[in-house]
Image 1 (spheres, helix red, strand yellow):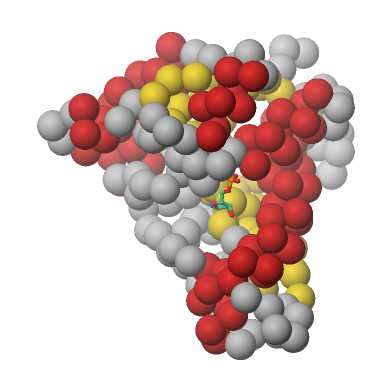
Image 2 (image 1 turned 180 degrees about the vertical axis):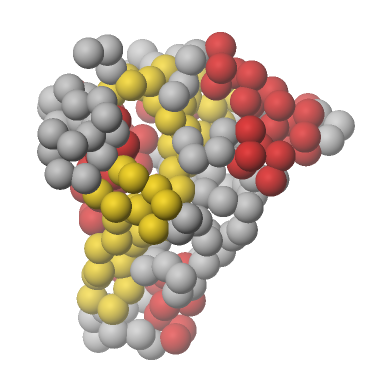
Length: 211
Ligand code: GRF
């Protein structure tokens, strides 16, 4: 069976992209990255993509008159590379309902909190300030809201005495790097059944594209 093609959208450091590349390289994830798209020409993710010989394109918001024109350029680029699943990996812009509907059910995101707690920016800082005992990370499909789409996988990460947003972010990031490739793998195997906001993980062998 041919490998599912991923399109990755990322704005910054790219450690989640790296985790996906590593999982593919180690044979833990059967997929192929068709293209990485960044909105930030200075993003480290561009350097990583070049090092790993992955096609990478920078599509800056400021080059387009409207958000819709910019999102159309991104969607067209994903099409050119035949991306079947779009993976947001630290993509720092909010996508409009136009984009979400165009790619309906095919866009995943990872967020560094246990949603629906602490959506939006600085989730780790929100968790530290709220003095919760447990936070974590969530992989979800995107919908028209802010970090509000159907939840695929979550994992808890405890807070420790004296945690700062940075120390918590670091601890959560390690978990993200395992959780995201796992969620992508489930999608690639056709094992995610979405009904409304409920995502059911099908047993191995029940999926629609086992490989
Ligand atoms: C991660 O913390 C992720 O949860 C959030 O943005 C950050 C991206 O980090 N959505 P990186 O660019 O993948 O290193």
